[in-house]
Amino acid sequence: MKTHVKPHHCPMAGCSAAFSEKKDLRRHKATKHRIGAEIFYCKVVGCEWQLKGFNRRDTLRRHTRKVHHMVESEPTPQLYDDMLPLEENFL
Ligand SMILES: [Zn+2]
Ligand SMILES: [Zn+2]
Image 1 (tube, protein in one colour):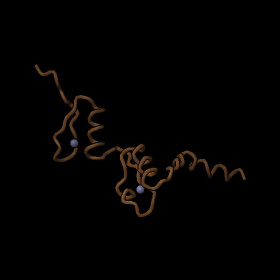
Image 2 (cartoon, helix red, strand yellow; image 1 turned 135 degrees about the vertical axis):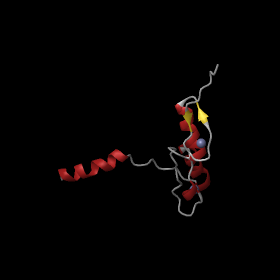
Image 3 (cartoon, rainbow, N blue to C red; image 1 turned 90 degrees about the vertical axis):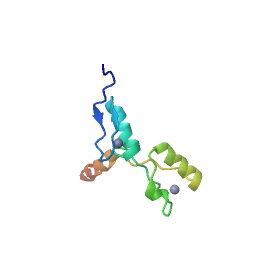
Image 4 (tube, rainbow, N blue to C red; image 1 turned 90 degrees about the horizontal axis):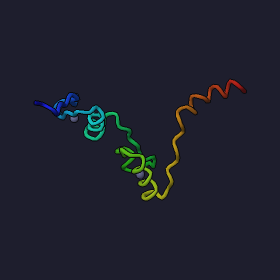
């Protein structure tokens, strides 16, 4: 009897990975194929990590602090940008 059914197959061509849980497939796609994974890029001009990017926010933060001796600034929340035109209307 088959107990370990893996219905979630990786859709990437040439990849035969399959998982029993959807979240495992998602993690696989994020780590192996970088799909759905957030990439955090270094903001310092000329830094090699400006193009490569980190897959973890922590790692970028640590890199920025260690390599550039800077504290990475918090990104402006998207919501704030959306709210700007409204504020202009009030003026
Ligand atoms: Zn895969
Ligand atoms: Zn950097």
